[in-house]
Image (cartoon, rainbow, N blue to C red; front, side, top):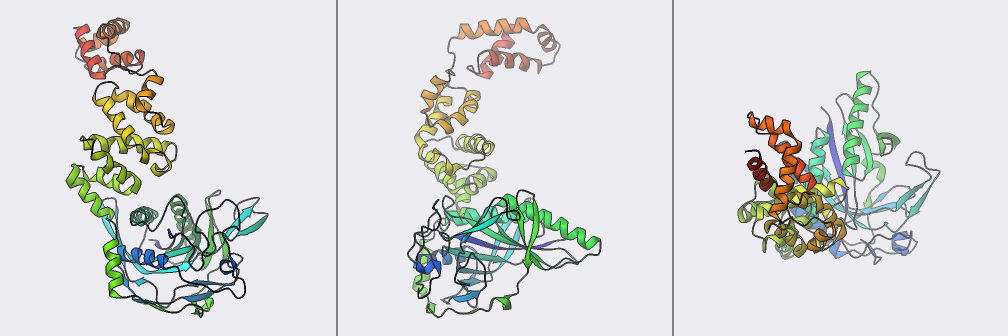
Length: 471
């Protein structure tokens, strides 16, 4: 059985960097959001970003951790191109919090993941591999726009046994971080160092995995690699590795460092900080509603089942907010939930997009109108399913879209009956099967009518007409 632990690094949603006034935002141009402090130039001095401390403590609060009222920063010394001053300012001796836990659900069973610590540190620069992947690049460039961005690191005990458990943890953790507004998925990034070991082998660290898919693939590969080595009596080295998403494999970077190798010393340019009880009370009071509370309220106030409430809550905070705004004016809450979950999310998954990446969060009235067109009979459910993708992508008014696509409901009953009569005459075997007791045979004829009418008639109405015509 494998042992897996995580060191999750989350870029905090602040306006400026952790120790200087440079903007904390993505920039396509390299080395623009920089100054002497985040470049590590001689004589520059850091100053603390109070907002970053607040956001770090928010994370500590939701992870059930023991909060430290006092803290200070240290220098973690190492030589690497992404850290120009040859040390990283981080927390080591006294982090923001220690000894927390985070519960997740895997296959219907609750699993408790213990946390070692939650602490703040500055992000290194971004290394750009030119002319290939991590292992095949011709040369590497350093972009210091990211250097000094505030990171919160969440370190777990090696409580995971499978990649599936890690995926469940990361999805729930990222959802919580977005709900409490410490992480902005539109501009922020997260990365994780994944520590993996199997019985009979040493621990390997997979460095800087940046997506849940890559995390899952890297863990599966690493377990397979280590298990194979142990099986054939070979040594599993204690080392730092990297995952190449192009090959789906991990590769050796360097031998694994121990804590003593970093030569931690107190950061002499920053004082220690002590927070009052009043500070923490105000911080606790300011925390927004947590996902588990939202899920329970969705079930109680809107009559949703556990699965509906859970998907709406955890898939995307923007989706949960959108549902609630719509639910205030659209009373069929279960239908609203089903269309968002099955049709909207289904389409977005097919095109590999997230809800927040579309214009949908700003189109509450149009989406309600889309549902009301079906309620009024002006659009069938099948047409709605055909058009939902175009509705999301085009940003058209639903009535205009319906007219443009030529999917208006056929209201002429005589016309529909003529099409039904014509279609019934074309399938004598299906008619014979139905008359002999095979009721499902009528569905074949109904499908043919729907195809002829381009789904512009209600299936139940067509079925009734087909049965009447046969009888």
